[in-house]
Image (tube, rainbow, N blue to C red; front, side, top):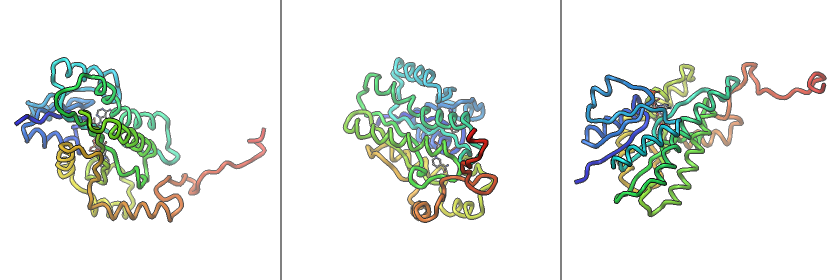
Length: 268
Ligand SMILES: NC(=O)c1ccc[n+]([C@@H]2O[C@H](COP(=O)([O-])OP(=O)(O)OC[C@H]3O[C@@H](n4cnc5c(N)ncnc54)[C@H](OP(=O)(O)O)[C@@H]3O)[C@@H](O)[C@H]2O)c1
C-alpha cells in the first residue's frame, strides 16, 4: 500500500489544523505550510515537515515546490486552505486590507498552480484542492474582499478542472459552508439571528477534514460541504432575490446608503 502524502496550507488553527491531525493520525507523509512557527504544534507532530512561509509570496512558494521536486518529495495531494477574512463591505473599506485578503485567499492558492503545471509529471495523479466557500452563491454580510477572492478562486479551479480533466493533474474545489472555527466566529457583532443560524447549521473542523480527505481520493471536481446547511443556503439565496441589499453591503454609519449629492461645491 502506498503512503498518503499531502501538503496543507494554514494548519495553525481551524480546518487546516484538523486536516493536519487527521492525515498525521493516518500515518500520511505531511508537509505543513504556515506563515508562523508554532513550537507546540511542531513538538506534537515530529514526523510532519513544517515549512514557514507566507503563501501570498509566489517566490517563496515556487522555491519550496522546486526543492520538493528536486528531492522527489512532491506530495500527491495539495490542500490550499490558508485564508483570511476582513470586514470591509461598509465604510471601513481600505485598499490595503482588501489587497491582503486577495493576496492570501486567491494568489496564495494560485501561486501553487503555476509551478505544479510546469514541473515534471509523476507516475500517479496529483490532486490540487482549493478550499473555497458558499459565499460564491449566497453572499457574505461582512467581507467584500473575501467574497471576491473566493469567487475568483472558484472560477479558476472550475476552468482548470475541465482543462486538465483526464490528466494526472486533478483540480478540485470545496465549497465550504459554516464551520465552527475562529474565522466563522470572528465577528463579535454578529446579530442574534446569525448566531442561532451558526449553531444550527455549522459543523466541526474535524468533520470537515474527514470530508475533504475522502474527496481528495476521488476525481470529482466539486464538493459542497456540509449538506446539512442546504436549508440555510436556499434561505439566503431566496432572501438575496427578495430583500433589496440583503447580504450585499452594510449601511453607512449615517444609516442610509451614501449617494452622490449634487451641490454647488461639487460642480466647481
Ligand atoms: N470557517 C468557515 O465557516 C469557512 C467557510 C467557508 C470557507 N472557509 C475557508 O476555509 C479555510 C480555512 O478557514 P478556517 O475557518 O479554518 O479559518 P482559520 O481558523 O482562521 O484558519 C486559517 C489558516 O490560514 C492561515 N493563514 C492565513 N494567512 C496565511 C498566509 N498568508 N500564509 C500562510 N497561512 C496563512 C492561518 O494562519 P495564522 O494562524 O498565522 O493566521 C490559519 O492557519 C479558509 O480558506 C476559509 O476561507 C471557512
